[in-house]
Length: 485
Image (cartoon, rainbow, N blue to C red; front, side, top):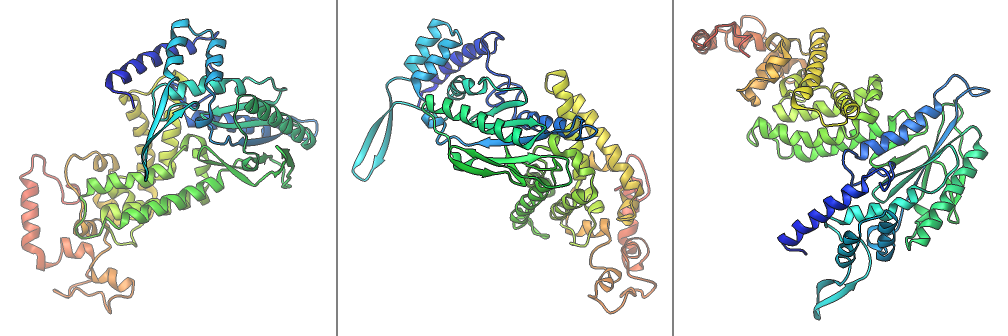
């Protein structure tokens, strides 16, 4: 491990080397998306899916523009630890790296020792290859080495996309036989390059999916590195499941299942009585939301399909219920508003809009620009809240979503949530679900014991009610009890 001064020096070398490699005439391939500024997994996935969506778009197959698109992913055995140092230096020389940087990197990669403990005492091992794990320079040196495979000469319709050591090949063609031939030729070129650079392709881990808009499900079998690789119904690339129809149905299902497991795990820490405050619960809930909404700029539009959206809403509802400590019968609409959790389909589209806008202007969005996108989401959320038939009691208390979400005070608890939802220890509610034998108020007997009766009519709580009215009148701006929420 380097000391602090060594880390600072390494950062200086990194910046200078990066500036050199980002120049157009000596730069890295535009198809390498890993460890680079303003590039991410989303960009790599979008590159692959854009090629596929363009291929299957069009008017017709016969004499038309529709084509097949095969996506093939490759796995490299122990990639980072197998990087051959002389080949890294050769790649740097090929990039016309200044001599002083070549000398520094050469020294950086020499005389490396690994110290470790054994039952027989401490030992050391001389490291002769691999990019240093956890280092500042390591990822950049890997990109320099791997740049060669991304620049292999390939026929029209074939592209190689890289993210770190992950390789995806997209092949577009009109005939299945053409797709098969191009895939196998590209795989052979990749294998030969890896072998020449002392890297090894794990042929048995290769996966492929054939994307098409045809009704008939078609498949091909590729021969790669001596293994027969049949195309699958879907494959996972950088965390997103790409299926044959590019519908993202499988991805959304798996994301919902994973988010549900996260919700179940954190629910153990969020009992209705006691436990973390609402703010802490909301923070824990973001773990489930981040799992569900990963790569939303890619699959967000698919959430317009009600079946997919319904799966995501069910997960979000369970998460919101744990945040606000509500009964499990509370609807997605009401629980989401009280918890301040934007519906998943609206949130997915907000993330997509922000991502697209950031890409168009070539920089990160400012706080003001992000707030503009959030306001669009809240306005759409408000429209739904106004129109839905669910959670109407909650709507009477919290009619304005923006005001409620942006409030600077007040947290809900198990008892307040019962008032906000109408789902709680009220005879009307208990009778509805078979937990009581009647609905009459157990104190005054005048009408149904509903949440509205208890809080606004029943004489049992007349003193408390009068006190609440008094405190509301004494506030800076008096308003009706249902507006003070």
